[in-house]
Amino acid sequence: MEKFVIKGNRPLIGEIDISGAKNAAVAILPATLLAKDVFLIENVPDIRDINSMLQILESMGAQISYANRSTVKIDTRHVQPGTVDYELTKNLRASYYLLGAMLGMYNSAKVAMPGGCNFGGVRPIDLHLKGFSALGAMISTDGGMIVAKANKLLGASIYFDKVSVGATINVMLAAVKARGITIIENAAREPHIVDLANFLNLMGARIKGAGTEVIKIEGVGELHGCNYSIIPDQIEAGTYMVAAAATCGDLLIKNVIPKHLDPISAKLRECGATVEEFDDSIRVSAGGRLHGCNIKTMPHPGFPTDMQPQFTVLLSLCEGISIVTDSVWDNRFRYVDQLTRMGAQIQIEGKAAIVQGSAALKGAPVKADDLRAGAAMIIAGLCAKGTTEIEDIIHIDRGYEDVVKKLTAVGATIARVNFPDPQNVVAKRA
Image (cartoon, rainbow, N blue to C red):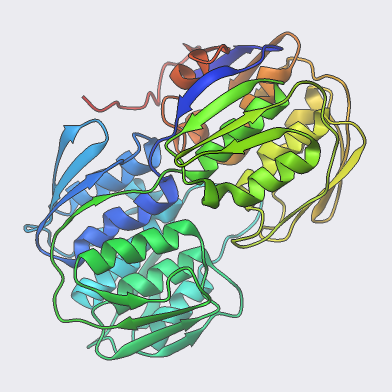
């Protein structure tokens, strides 16, 4: 197995390039199943979740090749509908997008229950299945598999009781070839929703309203291949923004869309950090200890839940008391146990964390409970006095490309090392 070893208490200074958006890519790649054609997709991040999705597509008959490390050619002309089993989906939450894509293309889908991050409770996909049912699909389960079948999908009006990124994306995938018009109300508005809609429209779909609460989809008979470049990853960018502030550093973060980072920028400024925006980059610096603020996660354009653990690390070093409330997921504070081992003073009360800022953290052995918790542990290690060792880094590899290389280039002392059993090494693209 592998772990990260970090010698902390050093400011991050320099430039970091942001990779393509994980949350957009895991939706766009299965969307290629909606056409029998060839796609050239640029700015694809080289991370475990994406490599897992590409492996699934290849298992279904797609031909995958690389023009370079971040540009993937996908030929779906020989894909055949089939079952996507648990071994391929167990570590990938976004595998449920295969349901929408296969249902949209073949009027049937059979996919194992998705895996991915576990926040200490069930992450249901009831809204996804409700959307499929509204389009005319019959839903059942078979030995841990989700089965969706329809004679013909028909457009429908669908209202989500709760904003759901995954359900919005899945219904979009299923509805683009359905007969008639589909209207999704109370739709998610995240940037990767817009990116998927732009990709589908380039394939020949007719989608309007992505990025608003109401999305209108006019079904079409056929879709075709295209060339497309995925947007930058707002959460990767936000993670490095917080790392710059937490280490009292000065980072120019390149290849970003600053507008996507507005909620993060606003909170960093509230804490006293300096945030400068440029056309496709953003600079974050902090000259000393910052002061705390309150955070409440909300669906976009609110503060993203995927940035909550990272920002809590920063707040644990700020002056004063801060309150962090996560209104999106239950029990997303499991990582706090790891932070308290490093000296953080945090008390959990239901969906809120009360953070008493302290002057320093101390290096300790910790683990990554999930993807974003793992990113939080990295930031904590970068700030801490002494050495921090982070285990279960397979979670971090799911969403952060070249994290050691990027951080080393801006002054961090971080290494990936093997320990007793050298398994689960991530395969790298040539």
